[in-house]
Image (tube, rainbow, N blue to C red; front, side, top):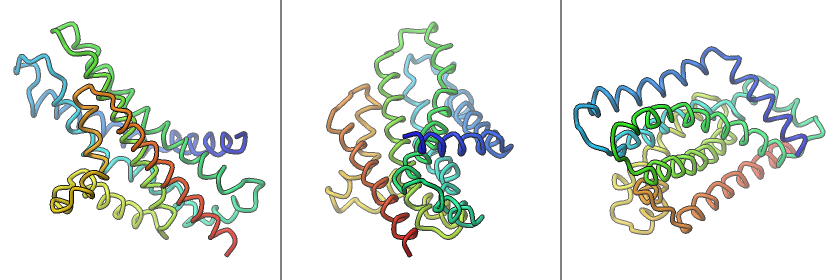
Length: 233
């Protein structure tokens, strides 16, 4: 656990010392705000419903989370620092856990920074706070699963650009499963977007939570196995 914390702190320091990270945060916040206030004109709509605010978030994750995760392993490999990390008294599992923890903190901070929007507007009407909480819980699970998938893609990729493009394509298909999976109910079921819809209604279904936890664990396990293979070859 100590080694994982060391890796997580290292990655967080690198992230928050980079000017590009703040541009990414700014893009996320300004895009979601423009969507809410300008495009959907929430204040003029006179509806006590934040649902429209959260509908954009899964699509923002398509471009934001790959940008967060693309350098986690592919960047280390490009810079030649992955081999150095393999020489440290650090297991592949600890490396994966530490890097995933850092990415999860980064994505969670993005969500936390959006909370002033609903908090400042709650006084304007009778909003369903349970639905708002459900949306945030669902977005947390969705982002954590996307991070694990993007992390695995980064572990397979030789460059950050390759990892980013492949992750964006995967997330787009997972967010819009009807484009590819409309003829297969099973494939629609395994899409994260399908399991997020209940949270968007304020419903916390243990089956959906279990789904997100299992998928996240599986892709972290795949990442660990990929790094083990690279370490010993």
